[in-house]
Structures are given as C-alpha cells and as structure tokens.
Image (cartoon, rainbow, N blue to C red; front, side, top):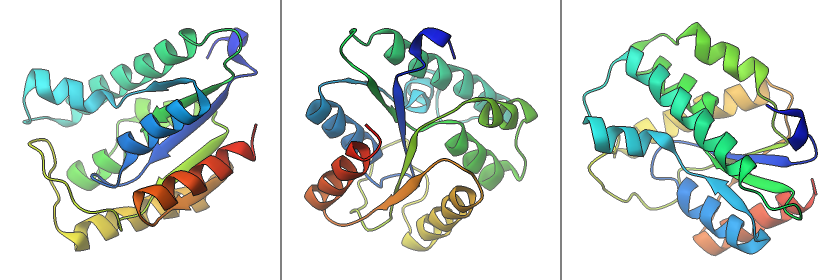
Length: 181
C-alpha cells in the first residue's frame, strides 16, 4: 500500500456468499459518498468460467488487490474512506474450504495488508441464487460464517457482525464505520 493513502480508512466487508456483501458496500459507499472496490472473483469467473483451481484463486487474489488499490487511487482529495467487497481473508476461506489449503502468497498478503475495520455479514440474509454461487444450503453457509468469525477473533483489526434485514444491516454498518472516522 502506498504511503500517500495512509489517512484513508479501509473497511472490508466479508462473509459467506449471498450474505449481502456487495449490496452493503454499494449502500455504504453511497451513504459516505466514497469509492468501493468490487469483488474481483465475480469478474474472473464470468470471464473464465466457474471451473477454477487453487492456482486460479491466486490470480483472483491479485485481481482483488488491484481492485482495492484502484478504488483507493480514485478517491478525490476530500474522500478518506474506501469500502472493499471481500479481501484476502475471503480468499483464504475459499481456498481452505474448497481445496483444504491456501497459497502462501495469499497468507502473506493477509499479513501485509492493513485495514481499519471488518464487517462480517451473517447468514440471516435471504439466499439469492445466481450462476456463480456454490453453497445454497444454510448449514454450509453457517459453517463458513463461523470459520470467518474464528479468523476475526484471532486477528487485531476491529470487526463487527452485521445481521438483520437490509436496513438494519446498513444502519449498524454506518454506525460501525462512523466510529472509526
């Protein structure tokens, strides 16, 4: 991360698939009149198909980092916040869940990248089917949620669980972000 963006607050929205991460990022970006970094995996899978390997996940990780940096660079001088739809923690969970291993370069990126807040989306959002989603059953989604929660508990960045209907989620997320600004 470049030194010119030291005062920029980076908020990452994570969680299992179909928990409202993208919707929350978009609404938070609109509320705070700032930029957000979309999830690169969707673009990658749309372009390259849904058959992926562990090596593909590293390429997706690189694209995710590029999206994040592009969002930071596109901030205007008065904008001091960027919202990030998934990060390397999501790549770790995805890698370990699907392949029972994670590329060391992804783990190194987790250690090297610094954030100001994580918002962990709970599985109480309604499932929305699309062609890229793999785990529609609530049991699997809950298992993944607890895996994310375990990672959050064992790291140092502040984090909050985002639950409830979409309006409740947004209002609580706004409160959480306001607390770091």
